[in-house]
Length: 216
Image (cartoon, rainbow, N blue to C red; front, side, top):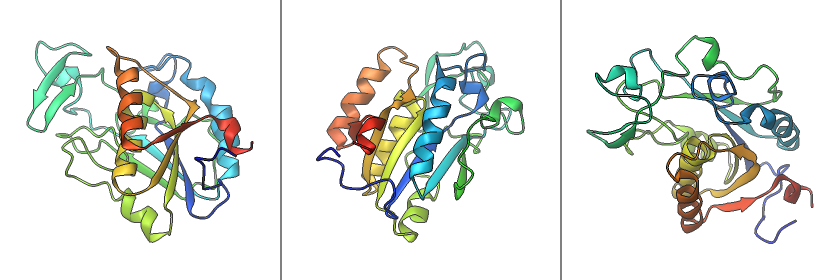
């Protein structure tokens, strides 16, 4: 076990945070992350090691402010400024109740205690599982974890440079020991976003590990 890893998955103070393993982020989806579906077997194996698992699910209304279709003359991946700051515009994705918003059918973590839906507010994007993009509105996840005595989170899923990274940064800011299991994530890498994310994560004290280190 690496010296930086002071919590085992089986420790009741640890939780696995599985980010947005949904069809719209899989190959063929509206906002596909390359090879995102290949993570499912590894996340299933990791999930079996943890007694505490939380799953997040992007869950947007049809007119969500992050959709390029909500802004006349704009295209997906344009950047605009909203009242809460810069916003990348996305293709319509993970619309509430659609197939694309569903969790991958092969995701097998039936013992997960919580499925947290985010991005439900039509006027605010929400990459993070902890704090929405206005950096004020809380999802309640930090309180849930702390009430259960959890002080450490391991983050996996999609996409590494957006929802995974923002969730890990906010977990760290909320006082949690935080690891990203790098080989259990995939990135979009939009205009250098992956390199930026890793630099921000390291600066914040988020530790990068690989899945093998959990059993080494």
